[in-house]
Image (cartoon, rainbow, N blue to C red):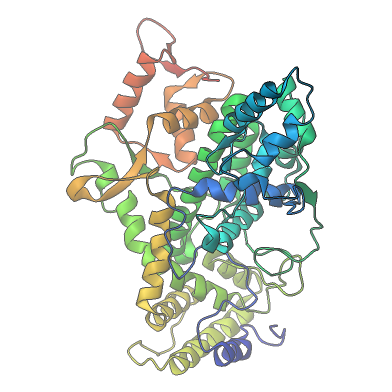
Length: 486
């Protein structure tokens, strides 16, 4: 751990390099579940992480002993869960039993996956199937990341997935006979990360609060929630990663509480070079270009987070991940003498790092301010890490958004993409229960990271008009309102 007698833990960082023989974030909490060995496993399989995510929230785990012959969630023929439920019902003859089992198989399962016909059943989405055994660790990391970053022990969200109440007899019967999960203690060793306690540091407080607000609103509409919860969660996780790329590039000037909207295109509209979504600065092109910097940024900030101001999190063996801007504010708050001492230590650490990595091309002359020092250290780390590793790490962002929130548009490359159903979902959570002015809707979407140029807005107005969810205050058409969808 860092000694309080020094500002930056240079000796600790040196020991870390000498012990690990590679870049390591030490005891600093992670901020993303990305792997440096890119697998592409998350492409089209995001829903596989939902079970682990919900079980982390509910503090339960799947029990391997629930059914004696085989794991009921991965059977492709007559399913043991279906047979177990059917065995608790009285029948007139044997044929009725088989018919009911077949019905339950179709009602509850889609190939290997259980269909969440009730929020509690999200707990039963197995992370490991015959198809993706080798990705269990990766999907588990995503599950833990989402629960710690986006929910963070919110009891209202936990209650959504812990509640077994149902309004129909069949679902009530199914939930009553489910016994494939068991509680585990939060203090027990984590089954996925093999670490005790918390593993991820939440960074975008306002953005994650908005996710919680949207999920709680959707939970009031059970049927729509079951289909929309996975998609909305997928979006928030993807946009969270995009926002981190933007914020890290802004160094000490980043406002971690403000979401920077990015330009999306509607899936059904044509694109041109004049469109914002295809531009260099406000669409996916910028995020993709800067994604190679994500890995060196994380390691730079982790190095800087080994300091005497960092008291860590809830657990003694972890340190908080402190972004550039927050760290700079903390240092300035300690006075000029401390700031000067910290600057001196960072300058010295830059020299140490260049020596440890045997780098000579970077300017090692001491800089005169902490923002300059942070940027210089980043430049050194960027040169010091493997370009191939940094590239693969950053490309996880494209895998996370593939097939849903990204679309290849010919020579323009990939752009942020919004499908019809997701546009309506975002509109539903933005408008909620009372109609709002059309301009306010676009502001609400921007708070969630989605911006549209005037061409897309025109398309959206036309669509809303066709769907009869646009309301005019008067015949003059001066003010247009968007009606609640749900």
